[in-house]
Amino acid sequence: MRLINRHPGRVLALVLAALPFLAALVAYSVSSEIRLAANPQDRLLPSLTKIAETAGRLFTEGDRRTGAILLWHDTGASLRRLALGVGIAALVSLVAGIGIGLLPHVRKTFSGFVAVVSMVPPLAVLPILFIVFGLGEVSKVVLIVVGITPVMIRDLAGRTMEIPREMIVKAETLGASSRVIASRVVLPQVMPRLIQCIRLALGPAWLFLIAAEAIASEVGLGYRIFLVRRYLAMDVILTYVIWITALAFVMDWLLRLLARRAFPWTGAGL
Image 1: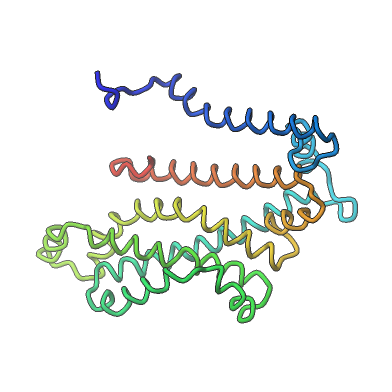
Image 2 (image 1 turned 180 degrees about the horizontal axis):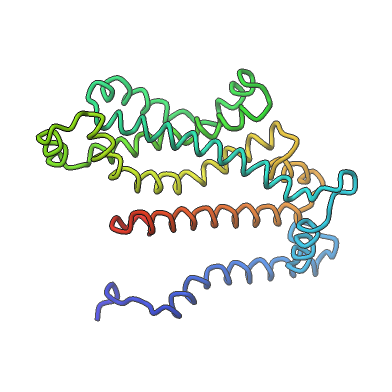
């Protein structure tokens, strides 16, 4: 049997999936031990034990001044900003993507504009957003929207244009209006792709959020990372990085589960 036709069993698949993580963990542990053996006061690569102790403290102990557990406080603030930014981007992308993909006049008017805007580096306009919207919550949410919406619009517009013309013609033959075609024919075809777009946009969305929080914020995961970097508190930074990665993974898993349950025929949950 050719190698391309071989598929691992469930147990082997789990082992293979765990191997890269174990390799990274071993590589870090060995590197940390080497550095700590040369200099026990080294703070660049804290031991795994130190990271675990710091994580336990950050998740359970309150701040001495306020009494609040800062990690949970930062997590709540960041997740609110992320959810609002991604939610607005998804809604705008869905409406604009269907409009550009389905209506020729809208396509001719906005497709070129969206293509150009999608090439603008979002972080380059961050100072402009701070000037226009201030240093509060609005500028952080707008950065996420500006950063991921144009690419999502182009993707959803392309998916709309891929819908077989025969389906639209059949709907027109049955007397369906443009609004009915958009809601009954196009929308069910585009929704699975929207979930995929959100999954792909989560990584950039986290990047833009952390960048905005690092520059102008008093609470948030990105703010805390950049606050403690001046003290070389790598155990705190690594704990936050691992926590952000875990949050992003859970979000992706939930979206994949939603796609699998809502649209099982599309393979969107892969």
